[in-house]
Length: 103
Image 1 (cartoon, one colour):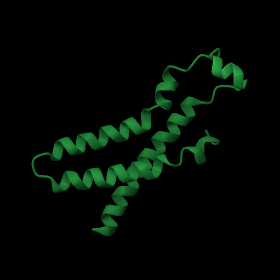
Image 2 (cartoon, rainbow, N blue to C red; image 1 turned 180 degrees about the vertical axis):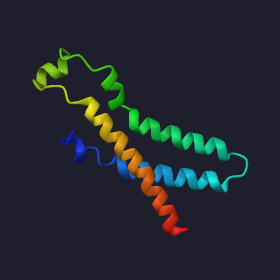
Image 3 (cartoon, one colour; image 1 turned 120 degrees about the vertical axis):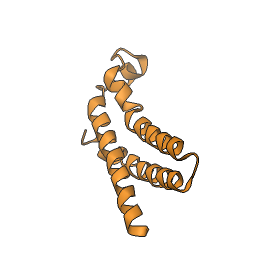
Image 4 (cartoon, helix red, strand yellow; image 1 turned 90 degrees about the vertical axis):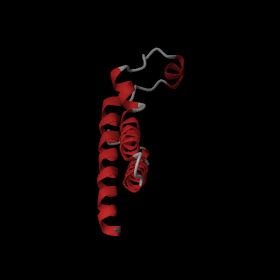
C-alpha cells in the first residue's frame, strides 16, 4: 500500500475537482440539483472503486501470461483500494474546505 502512495496521488486532486465543480453546479442548478449531485457522488464512488476495488474482489490469476513474463508478485489490490478510497474522501473534504474558503 505504501508503495502505491506516489503512483495513486493523482486520485486526490481529481476527486477534489470532481466534487468541487459537481457540487457547485448542483447548487446553481434549479431543476437538476438532485441529478447533478447523484452523478457527482457516483463519479466519486467509481473513482474510488475502479479498478482496484474490482481487483480486490476478483484478483487476476497469477498464471496470466503477462504476469508470468514479468515474474512479479501480484500487488496488494486491497491496499490500493483503501488508498484510493482515502484519497477520494480527502479530495471531497478538500473541496468542501475550498468551497468555504473561496465563497
